[in-house]
Length: 106
Length: 118
Image (cartoon, rainbow over all chains, first blue to last red; front, side):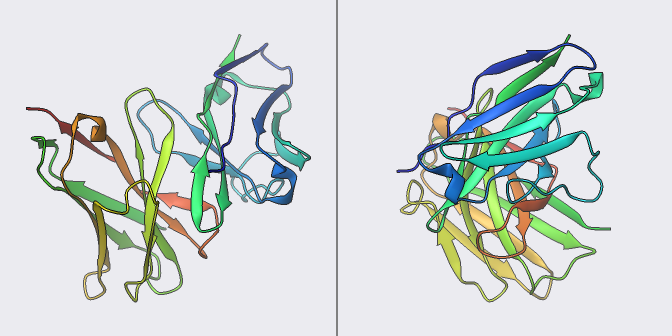
């Protein structure tokens, strides 16, 4: 079965750029979606179809996807961006999630 | 404004059936696909399956033998039943909306914590 692999944790200094990866076999051929989840809250869609931001999401969030890696980039990370981030894709008719990455803003 | 409100029994014994319901507000029922997703404590998200207004359901093979999803169009609600629960089914269960069968999930319920314990 298809698997998505995310690093368990990533740290970034306040105001710097964070890059969160999601690995999968030939993931560049799939649409990848990214969710932000803060403690005690439901996930929030921040990037859809690999690179598109929903209208309410700040411009500092961007996405890319090529080869075996999809990437969520947060440019100028803020304290409020500290959260868990989950990638998601569809394999046939089954939705697959990565294990999630905890982003710490230092 | 789209709002998904969910509820269900929070404490179950092993072998019982988990049941969670999600009510829709501010959104069409017919246009979208409706999913259930769970998150065990300290773990990632896991998709259980999805259903359309017409009742056509697609399940994650990992749950296929135990899961049933249903809809009540008159009440704009859909439900999840998971039978023969075990401790490993302890999780927060979310309902979520997707535009098509393979879309992202753009609206989520608040989550329902279900604990399975003897």
